[in-house]
Length: 474
Ligand code: BGC
Image (cartoon, rainbow, N blue to C red; front, top):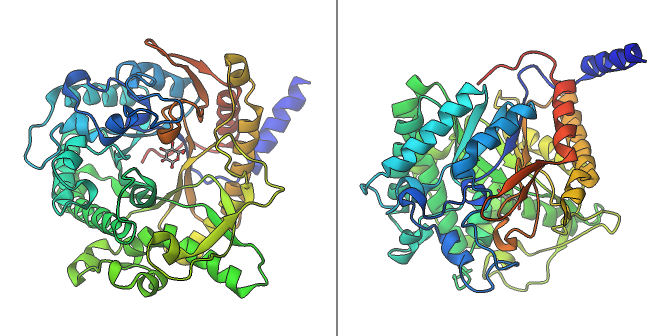
């Protein structure tokens, strides 16, 4: 019996489609797991403040303690080791590192010290860190005393913070992301009363400028010594035409992809916004000057994206283009056959394959730029620890999405990494702690504890089976 099992394992390894050096990882973000919201001189972020407003989050919770990872990072890193997960995507907290937010303001040495210790521990344990500079936790002071994300000085303030981070952690980190999901930051995030006609485009523009300048700084000052890579993390669902025979539905799907992924990936890869956006948004879409276009074009060393779900699209019902939604003018629905996650997001495993193929054709175009799935995973209804220990639905989700990543690789696409969202249950923004995405359960409270779920062990075995040769550490 043992022999047969051994043979089967060998066969699996031989059949594995992942290229040598493929990075299996897990991801988190500072605000969602760190807690310690005022510890060591940290100032509140916009999200800390919002979450403290009555009825802001679905369950009335705020990320004050969360998983307390700022203090318990060793437990998290030990879990990565236990799970055989050698690649860890995480983010740093701007209001922790530069509490007053502004360029030139004081750096918080306590936070630098703590993060340095954390990176030392990460290194000691043989894990490679992938660091996002901005995962939505804007220092609150920037929007209280300024215009926040649309402030004309936002790129300068961000550049200052980025420079502090590069300088402080260049000995430990070689994989950098400027912004996580600029589309969400521009369209979905907070600011209820914002002017939807122009604000999303102004925010997006500011993010792109800040990104381009940060990449320029990194490449000019740090890259030759640091020998790392830098880029942005995009996000998109896969939009399918509801009726593929109907040209209007086909166009709607095209618009949906261009107003989500294309809005940011086109400037970063080609130096300008997609034509369809320029046409439809007209004068409300800011323009790049020639220098900015040059800075932007090729400002990512890889194509990184987060992906969770897909939808069916058809032409919307807006008569005039006056704001973001009417500019896109798309109605999205679900195929009733699709199962839903606890977020009510449809589970469409083939979506990730089709998206990767589209990215490959549209952006990679035969170049050597590698593709990374920097987030993928699902919220599962887990009321008790017992539910968490039997998170079968998550295992099926991961299994089926990964099979589709593998399929794209088999077809010749250069995908080099996949990160599960998330290592831990965490603060799920508007949903508070009511949604659980982790492969490790967090029992919330003053002293949060960790419990591995079935999916944690499933992922560990998967990585083991699929790792063909020693991974090359980037
Ligand atoms: C974000 C995460 C978030 C996840 C699930 C992504 O949009 O980067 O912070 O928790 O999706 O909603």
